[in-house]
Length: 126
Image (cartoon, rainbow, N blue to C red):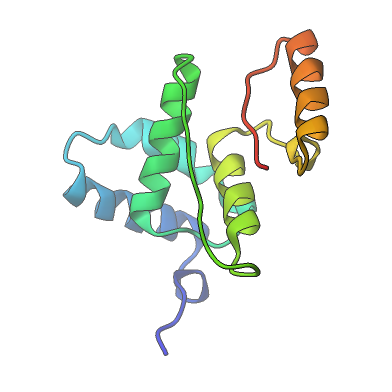
């Protein structure tokens, strides 16, 4: 079975490797900005597929411009949807906390009201 990048490379090497892979796929990738953004994401956990990392970076850039982002994650119960959604949220929003995860409409409405009062952006996992 192939080894994970994290078993054979340091975090800085993984960042460089991912940036190089994405540079081949997305020639207009702002390498310096992407590298700076991705290099502080080590705490999120195991690195994603480079294309998913790029989509998270792109969503992060759009969110900074107040553009909407919508993600749908589908799968069977227990397949890791919530974990993936949480990790994507952490990648996109460095201020994301577990307190922003809701499971019911009532929790969502309460969170939305609290975030509006605090002037926060809307990034939700539910």
